[in-house]
Length: 89
Image 1: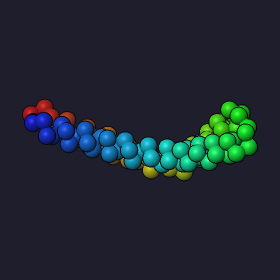
Image 2 (image 1 turned 180 degrees about the horizontal axis):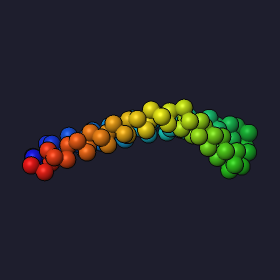
Image 3 (image 1 turned 90 degrees about the vertical axis):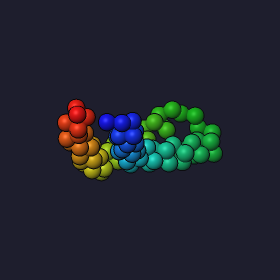
């Protein structure tokens, strides 16, 4: 085992992390920008006005993409566990 093997594992882990986070973070970011522009245009500075819609959007995204996100994490975990004997050599 050399350093390039573990660097490859870390790169793969970061890629899986990005694939799992993006379906939730991008819609929350877009909702935050739109609601921020709406609040700036109307001069309404109510915190719940921005928090509740973002919470609903994140929950909706988790309901829609949660299964595929879990499948991706399960595949990654199984792959990592299958590589344990290679690391022991």
